[in-house]
Image 1: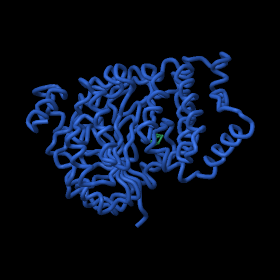
Image 2 (image 1 turned 90 degrees about the horizontal axis):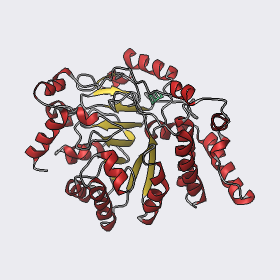
Image 3 (image 1 turned 45 degrees about the vertical axis):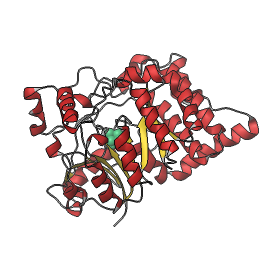
Length: 388
Ligand code: SF4
């Protein structure tokens, strides 16, 4: 069987309060969350991302990772870095697991965006402890927006000092983020900081960073609401599975799109079903133009010549013509700054919809949580019960 790229959303419970994601208000019920039995049914994968919510809220995360290692070449866990002891404990048992901690800016900006008390210091301490332990695969990620764009290059510099990976994203709207109103307001300002980062990445001697430069070039294109630079191939060799066992093409759709359910079906039955085929047809026509690493990384693998050409041209121009990358290489940036395209036109093309009804993708049973309390209260109570 062909190896796939899978993302496992192990829980929708989250202890953070991010301004660009309302998932913390819509948690899943622990007893409904994906079981080891369902995880055993997943296909072989060349890459697995474990995410949430906050995955380390699950007390059985080690059991999940142990099972996933039987079928995956590489595992990376995305976390807010808050539960340091659990993270260190897991890394001691699985020294090859990748850890990506979300840090949304320098201290004050991060704490404002993530809404976690002392969140920056907790995340940063976790990072430092992992470095002290010489954990080989550690990095941090940042969702770039108006509030934190100025911290982009300083954070990249910190990642270099610590010898870590640095991943970027920008604002998206979807059922997964329980959000429809995210949008970049000052596009030129944010793109300017991306331009600075791209030049830093191209300056480095690491080919991996040159490809990251391309990814960030795609983010400029995305925040100007343009067609993706590479076609989206989700649901073909890539999938997401949510806490309920529902297999989906991605986490970028407005409403939850389901190919099948792994609690009740076998992988082969689900993956080859007409329902899955219908979702693939929808992906082919999808106009949301997301640019998140989950959908871009497989696309880069598929279109490696096109991307390598971009990298080669920009390295060549830099080395031999002393020419830096400019965001004005993108026609839309020129048109926007020349006034040929207005902010309102770009806003209309984006996925931001101030009037849309937000779908959270929760099961009816999980929604019963709200009969007695808010999602935040539910998670707080749950964490107290776990004594973390
Ligand atoms: S562009 Fe791709 S990743 Fe984004 S919503 Fe559409 S199918 Fe999903």
